[in-house]
Length: 387
Image 1 (cartoon, one colour):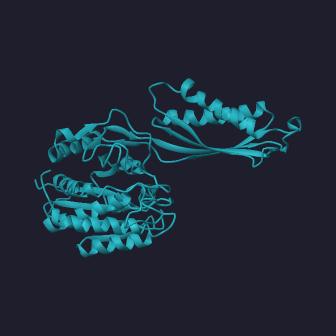
Image 2 (cartoon, rainbow, N blue to C red):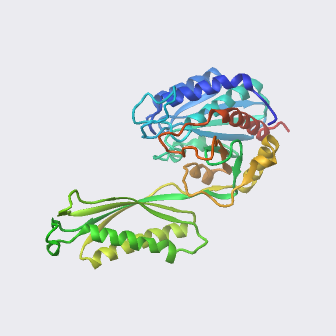
């Protein structure tokens, strides 16, 4: 690590704990937005609010260059009942920062303070504090509100903490790094009746089970083996009693992919199989298929820049290229479709068995705050280096 700002870390930690105590769900982060904006205004940034309702862009200009860079942090929480037992645990029952967005925002605010004090750059810095990453596509909503028209960026960068990566390591990848995600709800319409007289019914549970088993053949028999994709049936709801055959059964699927053609193929096969299986049982289905986030695709030049910078910052032993992308999803994908940039993971593991992201006992590792904060300082200063 090439620069140290230990005197600022107590404030960064306090910020993280405040955000953790006061979580808000996507598109309702009004108090969070007020808190972040107030800090940025005090630091002398030009603060623009209201993109995607609660989003913020903080701009700092220095020197004469028109070169620009955007750094994004997300600040929404999840609808999860916290079980950490931390002294700064969520004060809002059923809502918690279970993905570390409190840490992401605290690090970028910490970096904002240091950058403003140092003014060691030439150009335009845009700090993007984004709402609603988890479920509502806040990145896309900010762009729909003119993010890059109002705040042009030559490149954009973002990170995510990862408790599954060794502490302090930078996990990078050129090209696809996170998957596209879609969701599908399939409802089987049967005819209910007494469980003792199944011949007088059209049993949607049996039909639904057949659909679920048939869906397993899509990845194994329709998709090329080198095209990563996943179909998961995460919920199957039908009936309430052992002796009653219900009227309908409902299943909910999560679908992950990278290639747009594969994405289309998955949807087509899911529809064909569900309809065909239901027809074979004399029933019909209703299919509600929703396209979610696109795949997150990193750009080569910006990923090379990130790799070189991280190597100088942390050492070659702390930087690695991922052998394969993760099947998780991220709405930063939309920003990378409009601007060159790169998204990476910063390892935060405490042990070999840390609670994963989105777990009720997950708690962002405060020990990483100095690393993430100072890395953002170095990235901004290096990208906007005086020529």
